[in-house]
Amino acid sequence: MPSADEILQKMRAVQERRVAAAGPLVEVLAKRSTLLEQLAELNEPYGKAYVDAEAAGWTAEELADLGAEEPVKRPRVRSKRSRSTAKKTDEQTPGRAPAGNSPTGGIPSQDGPSSTDGAMLGAASS
Image 1 (cartoon, rainbow, N blue to C red):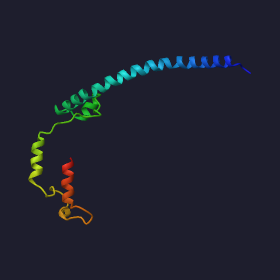
Image 2 (image 1 turned 90 degrees about the vertical axis):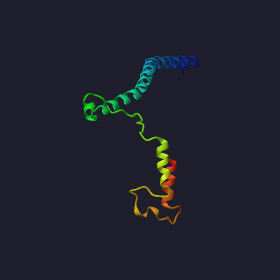
Image 3 (image 1 turned 120 degrees about the vertical axis):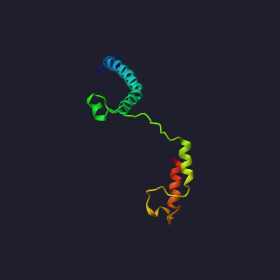
Image 4 (image 1 turned 180 degrees about the vertical axis):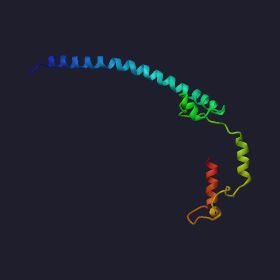
């Protein structure tokens, strides 16, 4: 039977091999992390450039043929209608269901508030 010292020496040898094997992995992980951060920083300008190219007349298919993939996250396109204008429009038609809804939109539900009230709640929470 091996002595306690022999067992400890074997354990240290195994541990040293494990540490040595992990060294290259740690180096690659650090480089990979740096590159992923750099890539993440490019996502926003890439998305904007892609949208600008589409606005200039390029189609998604043409851009794909050039090797430009559609961005994962497209930049927000600001609406031409301001928030105050949207709010005024909503306030002008209180209690009325928006056009295109079902004709039963104004009939109260037996289970709770009318669907018109629900539509107003939904509009208020958006």
